[in-house]
Length: 239
Image 1 (cartoon, rainbow, N blue to C red):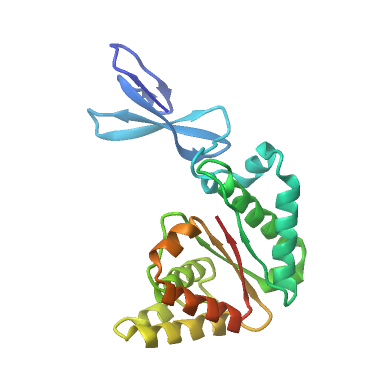
Image 2 (cartoon, helix red, strand yellow):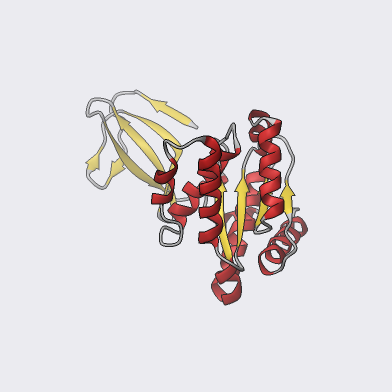
């Protein structure tokens, strides 16, 4: 939402005093216990931030919203989320690996569901040592796509190296640069499996999976499928 006010003498109170005539941008930034709106001050080429006394909800990017708030506004799909969490938990704790795909139009709540699955599993892991030991996440957002299995491996490894830097050294990514695609794919795949270790499962959260399939040739998809089948340490939640 954008509210513009250029009328003379309009001010908004801020911690550093008052602000000259401004443009008000809502739902841009989350902060503290409420939302933050950016107040543009063109003559200073700067921004000041004003707290709004309400929770922040991003309509198009639920991953930016506090998961506890998403739990509060979650309606109708309680059984679906509970069953999905149970299947992912089973994937982590047993040899039975599940791959879930949520289908629906933009804005139907698919990312909301994925966010809740991630949140609930993460919360359970805090009180269940075995789950915490066995569970690892990789999350590819809607803007990330790949035209080959190697590029997909790079996206996954990059994410886990940021989430678990002590377990998945970023240096392994550097080692594959300059190599042939086949050799790089083999080495990075081995690195991912080696660092994941025995008894762990990588739950891969993938938004806009249809776009990834659209851009990835069928031959590369077959390589991906064979990798997952030959190494049953992956579970997928896709939209």
